[in-house]
Amino acid sequence: MKSVALFTVYVLLSAFGLYKIKLSDMGFNPGFVIGFCSYLAGFLLWFVILKTHSLSVAFPVAAGALIVATQLVGFFLLGESATLQKELGVALIIVGITVLFVGAR
Image 1 (cartoon, one colour):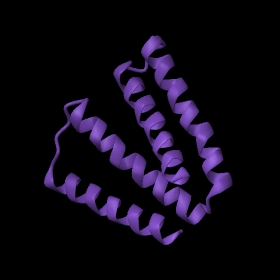
Image 2 (spheres, helix red, strand yellow):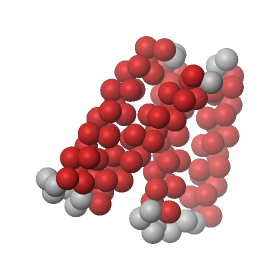
Image 3 (cartoon, helix red, strand yellow):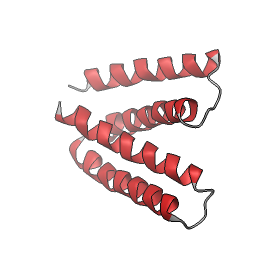
């Protein structure tokens, strides 16, 4: 359960950071600073994940979960389109993450 929490916090920090940076139009303003700091915190947490998990599981799980999270942020918060192709891709990534994560236990 600790692993799930670790990956979840990593993904939330990183996705939130990307969201705030996207909204800031890359200008140096409070939104950009908050986004940068959040993304940096996720990056630092990535080192903890690397120390506690095998790379062959950590990287695909973290990358896949971040892709899913950014798709959700794009759809729900940024008003981006949700196509059948994107939804199918996200579903396949979730299946892959589940297989890798459960198989690593």
